[in-house]
Length: 167
Image (cartoon, rainbow, N blue to C red; front, side, top):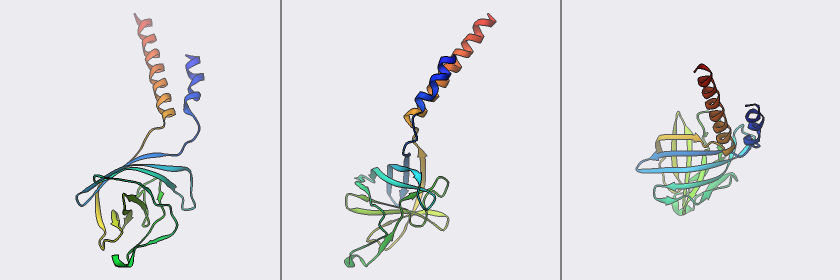
């Protein structure tokens, strides 16, 4: 038993960048994605999103647009723009007014939080589309799963040992 307790810290590993599963629907389009974040807080008090994979409807998400300020649309698309910071916050709301900006095979999508709800803006459109079914869940790190498994095994051994004593 002491050996199990002593070995437990081995499986915890060092702090890693966070991984989160994101899902939301806007209009008739459902987005499912996995986000990767930096492992330390940025100047806004959240975590910089450094990567994204998944689908926007049936279209593959091809990457995060690196924060560089403001992206201006071409004049032929009414001159609309999107400001973004790609920051994920630890508590709800998980995104701010500037939100997350990603590319889905040429479609630029900005997911943000404003006036009590999430919305999506596709660069070139003139309308913010309300988001429904927003979920964001942390993906457990492999070290956490190993630690959980070790704890369950140890608990099982303790219960088994107690049962054999009572017999």
